[in-house]
Length: 266
Image 1 (cartoon, helix red, strand yellow):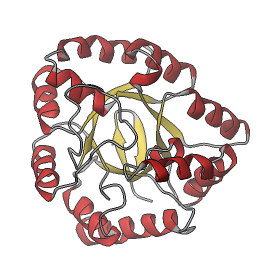
Image 2 (cartoon, rainbow, N blue to C red; image 1 turned 120 degrees about the horizontal axis):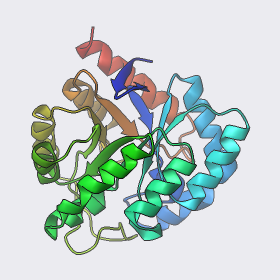
Image 3 (spheres, rainbow, N blue to C red; image 1 turned 45 degrees about the vertical axis):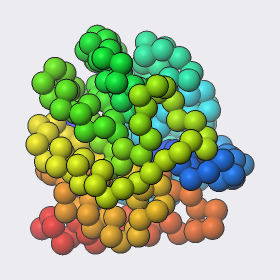
């Protein structure tokens, strides 16, 4: 597995995402519930160990109590994936999420994309630099996520972050609330993907490209080809998997990314 550098961390080009583990399908409430039922702690741990066997070394996962409990068991059983923690507004403030990330052994922590979109819409992004400083004071790399390209245009001018997570789709504007709500209306337009790719091209910091598959709507081969073609020197992709009906999904996704990288990165 190819790796890149984000701050002082060596990061696999393929990063395992965790939305399915927490029941965020970005499809419909029935699929959300099916994911929650399928992804017991035992199945999540099995997926993490499979990722390790494929050369993946990094997990992006939320700072909620479900993930923290799972990671405790996983590490006690010898798990080695490094954790890039994501704040989650429904279970606490910036400060509470950063504290949980630190206590849980995260190597990095970034602010939830919906939160960043919401603060942009509410003209409240001036609270973010202090959170970045807090994350760094705990010895972690500090970043932000977002779905709206304008978040990163602001960040490039006003923020000293170590990395960004850029969503390919601005699929549900978070102007009135930061959290994702099961069943909320979402859209996945090519114009949004192209807008984010143009923004990424001008960003100075490492970027983790996420939701490249449009939550299962894009053809995987096409999606990984687009991502690989637009990765820069220290960029990576973050992809979650739902293996209930596709037990080889993780292995297949890693293979697709590695094949696409071979085309564009000699």
